[in-house]
Length: 276
Image 1 (tube, rainbow, N blue to C red):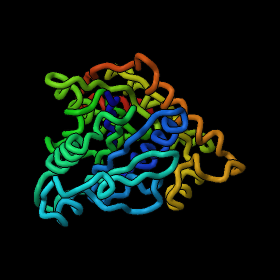
Image 2: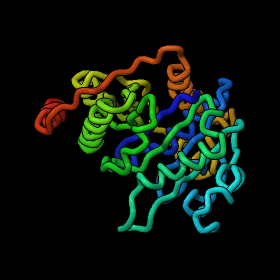
Image 3: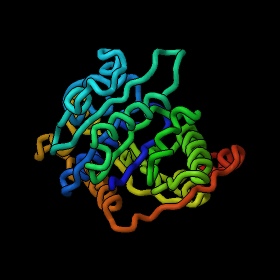
Image 4: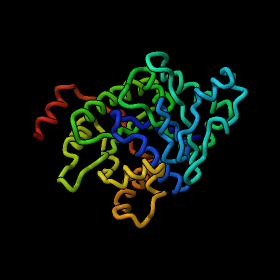
């Protein structure tokens, strides 16, 4: 039985880069991993496979939506460290629902007998959209992870995601494993004070702190995970450590997790205002 994760966060926060590096860390620790991109840009798996692969929706369109005509090779690409990547794709702009796309992807994997063949399945989900459609991966997930930075917009989105997780937990098994603090700029004295306070108030924790580093940006544009970069790069060890730390927590027998207790909008302003 696969352990299923759903990674969320504000749009542009670095979810896909974080997801790919978590997948790489998991694979290098011996886990068989499938990463599912849930974004019409279909770039989630780019650092793993080095290319923009065909989406499930594109593959289905080619066979007039006859599932039985597709094979695993039509929708799954294998990349770094044996990680499998799948891009769900999305409906045309202004029409359709992302939840349908996620559902079709899961159905295909189940029909192909692949869904339970992995140790970890990681859903990398589009932006901070928490409508019913884009919250669909929470229906399948054991745990959710939120990616955030130490600012108001990111924390506001994280709180909305906590609301979605809390609501889904009534009917499904999903819990929040924690928050990954991304782009922590130690060089300018930046920290995670607001994220620390927010995490405490909603009843979760910071899983790790990923530094703000040019190497992370360069690795993504190179179509690589950090683990595939030149291991002599300056600062690489500091960049790799948080992802390995997250992977260790995911693979532990009893990962710490909880159902979050979201706070009110005014309470978020109090957190931000208190650190001005």
